[in-house]
Image (cartoon, rainbow over all chains, first blue to last red; front, side, top):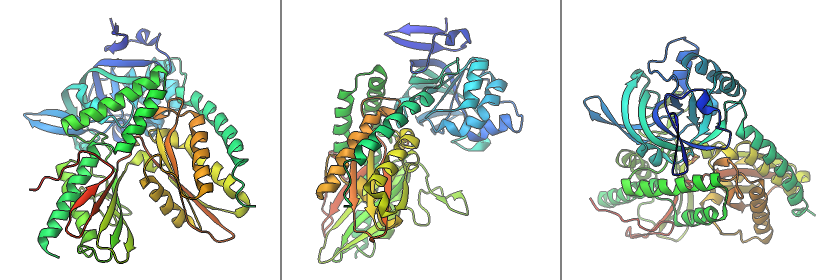
Amino acid sequence: MSVELKDGKKILHNPISREDLKDIHIGDIIYLTGDITTCRDVAHRRVVEEGRPLPVDVRDAAILHAGPIIRPLGDDKFEMVSVGPTTSMRMEKFEYEFTKETGVRVIVGKGGMKENTERACKEFGAIHCVFPAGNAVVAAVEVKEIVEAQWRDLGMPETLWHCHVEEFGPLIVSIDSYGRNYFEEKKVEYNKKKDEQIELISKQVGFIK
Amino acid sequence: MSNEQVRKMTDIMSQFVGFTAKKLPDDVIAKLEELRSREDSPMAKVIYDTMFRNQDLAVKLNRPSCQDTGVLQFWVKCGTKFPLIDDLEALLKEAVIDSTIKTPLRHNSVETFDEYNTGKNVGKGTPTVWWDIVPNSDQCEIYTYMAGGGCTLPGNATVLMPGEGYEGITKFVLDRMTSYGLNACPPLLVGVGVGTSVETAALNSKKALMRPIGSHSDNANAAKMEKLLEDGINAIGLGPQGMGGKYSVMGVNIENTARHPSAIGVAVNVGCWSHRRGHIVFDKDLNFTVDTHTGFEYKEN
Ligand code: SF4
């Protein structure tokens, strides 16, 4: 079983199938137990532009747009000190191809993404989630083990840190497997209210007489 | 000045900067608690719960609460008779280097044009130091600030024509909230600067972020506008992390200076929920007081 309900929490376990994402919608809060690999700018570029295979198998598992602070423990062991999501939008132009190539199911980052990712989520059955930013210590303690580190030539922030996590979250679904986009829908509402407020305030600030 | 005094002030500043990376100012914590108690959607509640758990863990595990510890910025109001005035800028740089290793802080200084990370968290003109010289005083006041990437991004400044008026300022500020503000980790503290040109407005907007949350401009019209903007941005309902809620901001602070009759300089600057600002005041013997944070203790090495 890949979707567990525990104390009111919805927890995904990998391997995650398309079917498992069927009842998950934008705005839902979920958690992840299993595998998540940090993967950001250069790693996306290598997969999509250079056609190199990702050295960590993320099929039916998760990636995290983040550059962590890691403490080496010796003997090729590492500890996660601090990890926070980075702006997902930077990966937007690669995410369709990346999802197609790697078969990733859950993409975690900061802020919204756009059409390419919507298309990928809908076609291949994936979701994009937001981990609330600025909570680097919470995220770090939810990492139970770093199981491997690949593409270390990229330096600490860009290395693929393959982590074992337990109830990693809260993850808020921003794009679901139907291609609905939480932020884009919200923005319409925000902009409408903004225009109303500009009008309202403007009536009261005629200080130049 | 004696090397001993320079070393001591460097040490205090290094420890204070490190402390501010781990614990938020008292006024920010109080405001976040208030906003948390007023949200009732499950999503907003879960996000606030995570934020408070994170701040507790940061103190307990002695780690920076957000991985982005920003570019260090200092606004100093230094008395002309403060004994360490000549050493101040150099010692602040030293303090950042020291704190970067000890806290640890992220390496956030990239030399422009040469485009490489110095690996020390300092570079040409970083940490930023803004000077205000105070005549006939022997004390030194320092505001510290960690300018993270996400919350630096919404910053914007322009010069409006007087015909656009304060209505134009309103639009300039609110437009920025829905385009960039929602990705800058709300609830935000919004600093608005009004002056005669881009740089006077911009500096005013940064100084506005150093004012305590809940403080008001002493100009009645500016204070009225602070309140209008605060209520207006809240009504947009960005909520924590821009994901929706009843509130958007911790406050709006306006700082203003006079302008040319034909120009209105305006700037907006934002602080994120993790608003790491500090305020420390030294007397001539380096006795100090901190009024932003409880719990800071200097440990002499
Ligand atoms: S905007 Fe602030 S809280 Fe968010 S990631 Fe940047 S520094 Fe951290």
